Image (cartoon, rainbow, N blue to C red):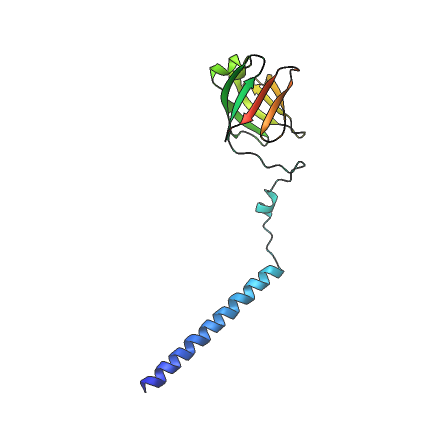
Length: 150
């Protein structure tokens, strides 16, 4: 009698596992044929003309070849869609005047980066070069370069 109960219980367990497996497989393949569309998530993914992703906070070495000066500054978190916080210590004023007053790092659609102070006055305009380096575009002949630190 015990053998019959054991065989019956084992058979029901195997049948239950088979039904559960088939049900799970059916739902998985059905989801592949009819993927769900979430308008909130899909609408929050911004399409970019340049294909670039907003970069995380980073430190930059800022140098001025003409003055033979350098300092380290930090690009921080996002303020608006293309604007990030920026902070430089007072010693960066030796590299370029008013560099310590810069509060905003704004990247334009064309890839140019504008460093501006809290009042919105532009201190430097940069353009991206090879790798993770930026070079001053305006004012012309500034000789200032930024290199992202690892």
